[in-house]
Image (cartoon, rainbow, N blue to C red; front, side, top):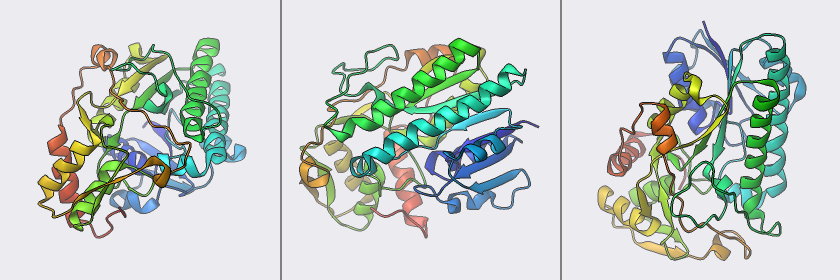
Length: 332
């Protein structure tokens, strides 16, 4: 039996990953401090004989040494989450992103150098591209961040350091690492409390409340269902050609945020209106956003056979159905 560690496994993506790993017959240890995750997200697998849940900070060295001692794979998803949180807590964002990654890699390199066959997946983000103006981002593109006086860029910069650390461990020691840059992953159990736009829209529409659109709504994003994203992640971890490489993971079908709001209202049959809110009102006076964020998926598609199953309309309808039938729908 393969033994797997999932950091941040009580979060949105982490809980879905944990369920998928258990369904494959693997033993899973979840570590989560519940700062943004919640062990209730794992209710469907509560009591599973191959699941171990530990509430703790993966930035604790003794805990890292304990949970990495015998695992075969590590999926590192624990990180600061969401633009709203990053804007409020830039210092914590930097510390929570870099320090645990460094400790996990140190522990795994030590085991690898002793001959243990361990693998490491780093969940990174499209935020590492910063404000690169290209219409589509590919993995070898330059990372273009704003000034250090703008806290907005602390998240992308700290996740880029995580990538550098993981790739350095691969180059120097041969540690098998795979890096996935996620682009707007959505699905059941995702909260809008940290700025995630689609769950905010869905919950507001179902309550017939205004859908809050930041700035003028012309920002362009792509949305992928968590089930599609995790199929790609698991395939990459089983593909030798993926080792030591970085992959964009998500959808490459763009939509403007204002149009997304209109589609959610139409699909839900809501009487909601759209309300524009400036970035200064939503976050800070110095907040900067990226106008367009669309991934080039050529490398991913050339490496694994996976293609996304859900288009945006299907995603919206599934999220609406889930929110309507959930007794614990996340707040807008």
